[in-house]
Every structure is written in structure tokens, then in C-alpha cells.
Length: 344
Image (cartoon, rainbow, N blue to C red; front, side, top):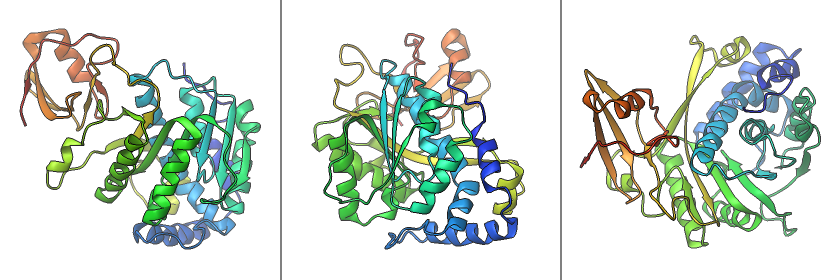
């Protein structure tokens, strides 16, 4: 069972931003949204003022939490024996990644949150104080700048979520190098846009060059097959409910949003499936027709293919109807079905 803190992250966010005028938050959200969408690397900390951090907390922290939790769950599906005891988050913001990691790996005991913004650190600590999770309460928050010479303490897993896009090319490479030096398992998450995917592909190549094996989402360490497809890229989506405050600061009408993300997880241990086949990854929403489910898969051989599962196949068909975009295929608890792969 996932770890469930005494106070949920949503409730903690609501309590932290209580007393701040919604109009102030909305104006700060508009400014931050424009800044992030510009695609221009940050020359100075984006979250420099408390109002900027509170606005980020209201409109981006829930989405960051949802995406990173989905990534960690997908990694756990592929490597169920991975049970990290320590995690370091580079560019931690207000700590969404730590909350997500504890949901998936409740045995985590050491959390190190590295962030360049003093304001973000202060708000992140206030949010964590509303939890009764000992690792969150005892987390080490440190001001940290990429490129500082002091080495980081080793950790079981090192994460950087939504950080690469704020850096110039040389800094992106330095961040990947720092992650690979710090932990045996590395996770990078970026927006699920063509530009975010491109940054993940570059980081993926650098991790492979440093001797790490790709663990997820790819079932291989070969070239991404979607690079050969114009207008296509590997990304996933996680639906999250919006709180009333979330809707207000974003001027949103829908009660939910779909956070699209791209990611790579890599490790120094032998790749999963080294003594057997690795499950494929579902690359798109399954297509359901009468008596037939079509799955777009990335396979262990490094190919993007279509799998058609007919109702006549029985249990594999039932599993295919339950499958979701981003899931491994076949599901971890089941052997492969009898369906055949057809070329795209």
C-alpha cells in the first residue's frame, strides 16, 4: 500500500497559501506561465519572490507531484526490487517530488532537497510541516547552485524534475553528469512537449554513454524508434483533479487537467529482464473497437509496433481493455498473451 500522509499534499498546499489574495496569485501565475512557455533559459531564479513561489505552489506543484508519482510508479512496475532508502532532488522547488516518492517507496528515510531559491525552500518546509511523515519533516533542505564544486553525498536515487528546460545546453549536460555521479538510479522528468522530449533524449544518450542502463519508460537502451517518425515523440499523461483554488488561479473551468510529461529513468544495475524478456511500454491511449483492442508499443527490440488483441483471445483481451497509456505490456503479474505484433 502506498504511504498516505496524515494531511494530504492538496490540503497542505491550501493551508500554506491561505491568506494570500487570489488576484495576487492569479497575476503571479500569469507571469510564471509566460516565463515558462517562453523556453528561454533562466538567467536568475524564476522563483525569487514569495508570491511567485506561492503561485507556483498553487498551480504547478500538484501537476509536478502527479507526474513524478506516475514516473515512480512506472519505474516500480519495471524494477519492483528497487527500494531506495535515500533520495536527492536537484532543483526541488517546493518538494513535490519527495511527496510523490514517499507514496511509491514508503521505506525512504533520507530526503535531500537542493534548491537555489531561498523563498522556495522556506515554502517547501512550511508545506512539509503539515505532514506527519518523518522523512518529510526531517528532510535536509539546502540552497544549491548547479556547478558548485562541493560534491553531493551519495544517494540511492537522484531526481531532477522540470529543471532541464531552465538551463542552457552546457548546464543541462552538467546536471546529467551530477545526477549520474550522485546516485545509482537517475530520473529526469520534463514537459511532454517535443522540446521536452528532445531534452530527455539528449539526457538519455548521455546517461547511456556514462554506462547506465535505461530502466523506463523504454524497455531497451537502443535509439528511440519515435525519432524516425515526423511529428511524433514519446510522452505520457496523468490526469489530476483541480482544487477550487487551483481553478481560480488558472481561470480554469474544468475540474481536472492532464499533465503531459516525458521522462527517462536509468541505473547502473543490470537492466531488468537481463535473464528474460522485458515488458513493452504502451505509447498511446489504447484504441478500443468492437471485439478488438489496439496497443501502440515500444518493444525490447527497440521498435515501435502495433499489437492487436482480439476478444477471442480471452484473458489477454480483458487485460488489454484495462490497460492504460504508459503501462508496461504485458502487465507485470501476467505472462505474455498469444497476440501477434504487426508492423506500424
